[in-house]
Amino acid sequence: MLIIRPCQPDDLNDLMHISAVVGRGMTSMPADKAAWECKIAASRKAFAGNPDASSTYFMVLEDHETGQVVGTTAIYTGIGLSQPFYSYKVSTLVSSSQQLDMIRQAKVLSMVNDYTGATEIGSLFLLPEYRKPGVGKFLSRARFLLMADFPHLFADTVMAELRGWQDETGNSPLWQHLGHKFFAMDFQEAVRTAALEGSQFISDMMPKYPIYIDLLPEAAREVIGKPHDSSAPALNMLKKEGFQFTGYVDLFDGGPSVQIARDEIHTVQQSRTADVIADNASDGQQQEYIISNGKLANYRLALAPASVDSKGLLHINPAELDALHLSGQAQVRYVEARKARPESNARVA
Image 1 (spheres, helix red, strand yellow):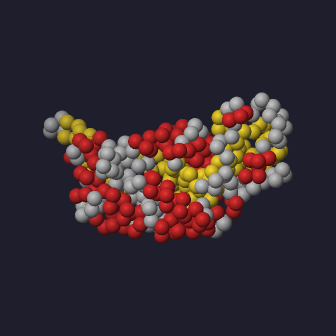
Image 2 (cartoon, rainbow, N blue to C red):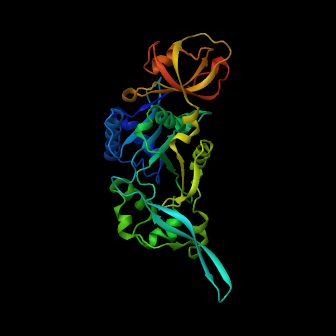
Image 3 (cartoon, rainbow, N blue to C red):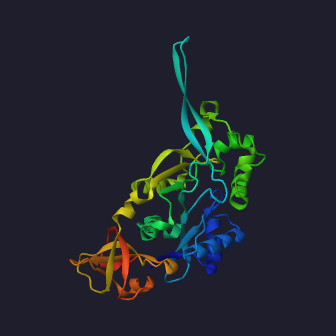
């Protein structure tokens, strides 16, 4: 059985292992013990009901049988309030000449802080051996159930910043032909500096004027808005939730940012609350649901087979109910994941 829950100090070694598997380029999960300790502490504070203007809700996917952390997912609130959050905005400049009877359009990159105060989702990762049907969606959609349970904790605008395309050596063509011109560091060093020390150096050194995209080499132009190969599935899942690309890209590698109004996220809209009944019986009408216990300080989510009866009661196996830290007298939030597989394979393991 797989359970999603808030991260804890005991997860540190597993999280360091996940950082090593992730590799370089994912700024929110550097392989740095001190950075992880800070993230865990911030997350515990937020889940305890003491959020700051910028808070972290970091959750892990736990193999309930072994206790191992096998995946991660997170929400970051109030981005850009504690330190600047920069993006490039792709826009169009139009120039004209009556003398030449000519109108020309040019695409430009402008450095902006338009997402200041928004809520960001990120840090989605699943160990390769657990990449089974439905598990990645479970990790992704868990964040939206948290938003549905506690909408007051999150901004009206929700965004996600996807890793940009990199070559086989881990280098970014956009950074090579643009960012590197203004910083005496390679791409991975710049990513690590931003992750561990903040992004003030960007404000100090990057040009404040629009950059004409046509003046960049083709290799750089081609990757603006292009996701990393490993991020493409996550982008597809977000598009299915209603997220849209509106022209914002990452300052380092040109990866796309997508956004949506919090209350328009499909999982938020489709989720429901119900009282639960602990029930071992299977009536042949079971489906897979993502189920949350609705308790912030001890938040738990499960991907489990269940059924909804004519009275709107959710029938769930006692083992899953126990894993959610609930008794038979409880209310949960749920959303349909997919139709359950045959009974012998119904549980995710």
